[in-house]
Each structure stands twice: as C-alpha cells, then as structure tokens.
Length: 135
Image (cartoon, rainbow, N blue to C red; front, side, top):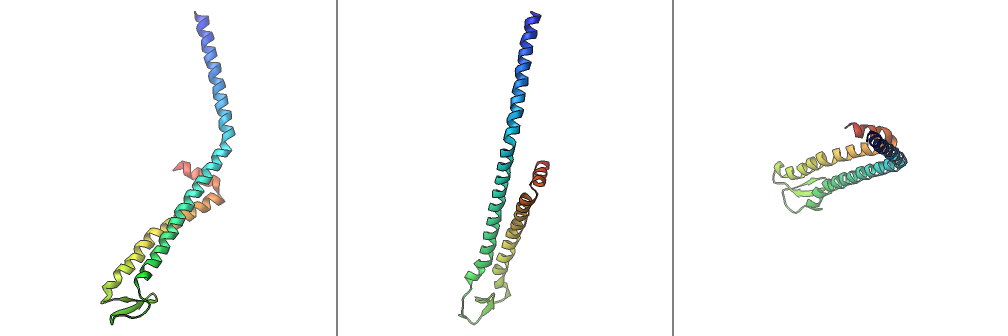
C-alpha cells in the first residue's frame, strides 16, 4: 500500500515538474511578444489621449472666435482677439475668458502628461515598464 502511494505521488510530482517546466518555457517563449504588445498598447493609448487633448485645445481656442463678428454691429462692440463682440461691460468677457481657462486647465495637462508618457515609452521602455509595475 505504501509503495503504491509512493509511486502515485512520484508520478504526480513528475507530472507537476514537467508542467511547471513547460509553463516556464511557454512564458519565456512568449515574453518578447507580450512586451511588444504591452508597449504597442501603451503607445497607442498615450497617442489617443494626446490627440484628445490637442483636439480639446483647438476647440478651446476656436470656439470663442466663432462667437465674434468680423465687423462692428452695435455701439457697444469691442475688438477682442481680432473679432468684435457685444460687450456692454467687462463682465460680458467672462464666458470667453472662462472658456479659455477651463479648456486650458483641462487640455494642457492631458497633453503634457501623455507626451511625457509617450516619450518615456519611446526613449526608455524598460524604465517605463519598471515604473508601471511599481505603481
């Protein structure tokens, strides 16, 4: 009985060791492809968010210019950014300035962060990998 149990356990241990060795070989064989896919995904993700930030910045810059007119229509019109706007007082400029501030506070950090991530991925991919797994 003891011999049979020992034989069964030795077979289980042998198969476990073979499976572990095969798994280790599989991981070693697949590691380069896995790293390429990891880097490709993070480059694509950073590029996508960088594009979103640039589009948002362009919209932020162009949107207030759409509100203006090329020529004076009313006596209260003032020229601002090359176009005329109906400003009764200085408080009428708040939506335009607010658009620039909010759009800038949102888009510029998106652009900076994703540009730095993209540069780190392209210049120092191993450093990016280490920092990614430390986080």
